Image (cartoon, rainbow, N blue to C red; front, side, top):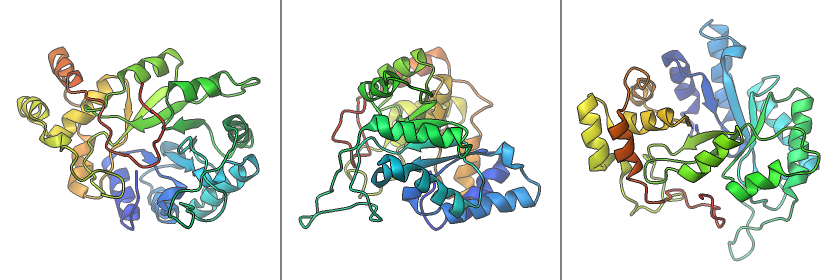
Length: 289
């Protein structure tokens, strides 16, 4: 997930290190920078376009079906790319249509909208048929919302993935099991819970990477707690997103393929689950099973 003005440089470093999955979104307001960085790495021969797996997201103010394709086309224009690899619904809660990212009333409350997710999903399917995206998916969906899409009459394409907050304190084991049963890839964000923006997170939240169990396992493998948290997800069959703007951290986050956690390690980390959610914004629905 790339959010600040540093996104362009972080993208180039990540590609140089070996990352090929670039996860971004309209909401992050940085797709021009990210697109420029990708094109530069293509131009200098580091990668080809087909080597990059680029994800963007449909923001919640564009859920009305007539707004879905224009929203994706706006991202493509900023990126200066012909297509994205994955286009996902950012969050299941529709907000008032318009240019405001977070539309609010006079009292400062978010203004929501009523849009049938079936209609939004059909519009995503049309984007795939038009070649604007190679695949479509969702984010922050619980089992009931996934079933809403899966049981849609006339469903043409099911979600390829469901991107959710997932880490040892919120391991989403039941949701993971359900997704696997439906051949839907679970994608973990906030996998290390290391970005403590007070706008999105309670500042009194526990520090995951200070967890004694993670530190003990990390010491045993001569790794960092963050690397252990990432490796844990990979061994569960979860695609994991690692966000960083530090070159040192980006390199460290990539060094998770040359060691393996033991079954005992995995069991110990499973035991850390406390259904604790760091990201509290726009989640009035129970997103974990």
